[in-house]
Image (cartoon, rainbow, N blue to C red; front, top):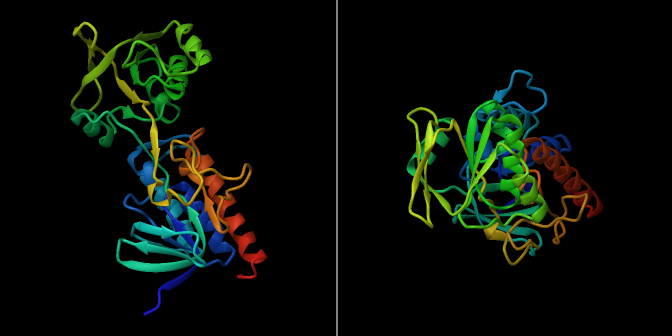
Length: 314
């Protein structure tokens, strides 16, 4: 039996993937999407989304993803639950394997596999994160909910420093928990943190536990140099220790940076392989917002449509 052939394959189902699907389906590319193991992506773990245009009263992450999915399906996108486990993108047509069992081929591939936030791995962190209890990996998304309150943020890089100063504008007090006696952030970002009066940096510190039954009430911090423990009274706990792009299966084929983010031709979604496009957080370590992911999904579909037209395939 020959492999199923797809004109436009979309891998991943966050805002980037669904927006690509909407545009590709309207262009009659008959897109087929494989959702990956987390249909809807990172946003399905987010409760309130208040910064996505068109939802004046806010929306939950899962509802937003269901709305995007319904819109993509309305124009004929086939959404399938499954994981792409192997890919030969240099073949013509591209050859891919779903769930280690089914081979498919595709003329164009839009990669929207996203990125996963790195977490500390504490049991209470996971519980409170999944129960919308005040643990978050995105200060820009969730900082607003902690206006006038005291919060903590873990991390020492540019993102952590940027998010700490962002939170400091909204919150009464921000504790910045830094594992070593120095930050990895650029000097400019470090100066900004140090010159913000309501940020207190806790050097040589690790989080032992996050306290709270239904929502964050505090955190136990250990100073690794002195062994001294301290309990912070906080209502929000932000983790900014990095993201990992979900791009491992494409390594060695697609040009990536040293962190694994797919590199695209600036101003486009084009990768180094003709007919392969990357959109959303798997190619964006700078913005990582639902709306920027959606915008890049639109670019991916338009780029795929133009590629197919120029190749005489569609």
